[in-house]
Image 1 (cartoon, helix red, strand yellow):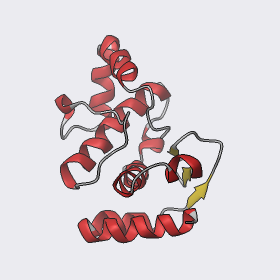
Image 2: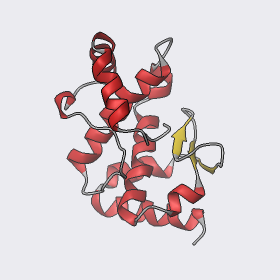
Image 3: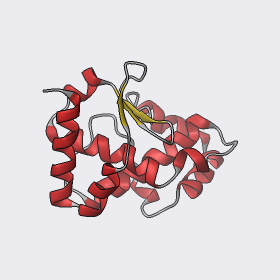
Image 4: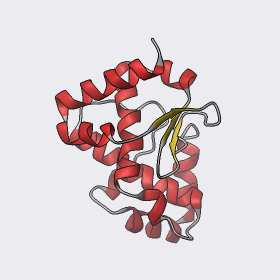
Length: 150
């Protein structure tokens, strides 16, 4: 199956469960890119590694697409400003993965970063807490070495 067909399938499957999230997916430009290991966003488009994406099951594909779309919708790239990009990415991943876990039945792939102590928190709040506790940030990164690139 071509990447474009898989993305269309993802949108339809997400639409059944969450019409709002699916509507966000309709407006996201999705580009196949071998330059990223998994999937990522530059704040404008979603970049997807075809080989990685095809290695996932359907639920994981839906979760990954939703993960990247939520970064776009929540303007995570634009809100980073001059903050540390790696720490900001960890904080942003915690936020979007929490939204996916609480609002869908989709399963994020192995290595997706989670921290339930930050439920319902903003990315700025999570970032500031991780900045105050670098051991926790390092621990989260070590626990999840295959973090999504976003």
